[in-house]
Length: 474
Image (tube, rainbow, N blue to C red; front, side):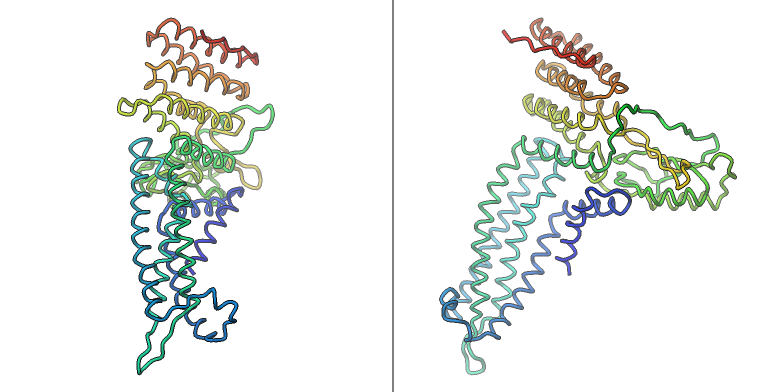
């Protein structure tokens, strides 16, 4: 039952990646919760091993001596003592290998946390290779112990029983485990490389934004909704503390229609909520009756149940989380204890690519209407300006003394200038002005300043749709 449920959760979440609405979002969050834990897949493997360890010996009893001679030569041919020795050796070695694998995984998590960012741990925890490797080792160990209990030596009371098929299956599992160990070590060596980490974060963040955000129509502009909370709006208070990880929009629209009200959630997914603090407001729709106490209580109850909180941010519905991870890696690389500007430059390159993907998607407050087109729910979402600030502000501050980092930020803004629609160009221009002031205040040598000014000019020209070639370095 458990293996089937876990497989359904993961596969259903994969299908829900492209679905919209509360069901798709719930499945995505369920898949994320399962994938970011080390125990579900190994536990499923242990349960499967117990079933196999019980079922295959019974199959051995059923077939007995009726196995064809052509197949018999490939099965285990020793006696009960040899079978016990083999299974005992398998169990002893596999628990040792499992301990080694777990230790290597912990060391990798510690390295990722201290060297790059604690928020990268979630990326490692959801690594399928780690899950499957641990599951394979524990499955082999549990299977060997389960089969070992069925081996019987000859005595006056019982006949000798050697489960040939079962012992041979244990040998096959050991061979698979050895191959899995080699593959795990190769995979681990690849995963601890910063280039792989940045690529994985970028990939997950890109999948989230394409699932959560909608593309802008040609010629459309950012325009805040023409709805503002009136003075008599009722605060909607959070019922728990934690990070906002998801919102059931359908439930909010339904309760807003029932109460003939408008609900405004003023906290974006990824925000930190505090128990008892307002996360939004509700008010009667224009021309409707004032909200009575029962309606207010009903609205508060439904909003609390529709807003999902967690102990940490996740990549399920949080479009800014991947950008936060990339910026953390950049910041960590620029810290005096690490001092790795090359990694910072690589991280800014991924931030540039991710922001370019976000540039033509709907951002800011989203409006949800009922079946008659009346505004019912307004949801806060990060604006394009906030996302650019997230990617640029801290690296600009911490990397002000390194021309290579400042140039990488300028290149980010230049690449972004080619992608942003017209109404979002002032955001890029404002960041260019702030970067120019940082360069002026840093007191870099004239040669470095000249190079930086050229990249800034390239970005300015890109905002006008003009291309300016690179100058050759001397």
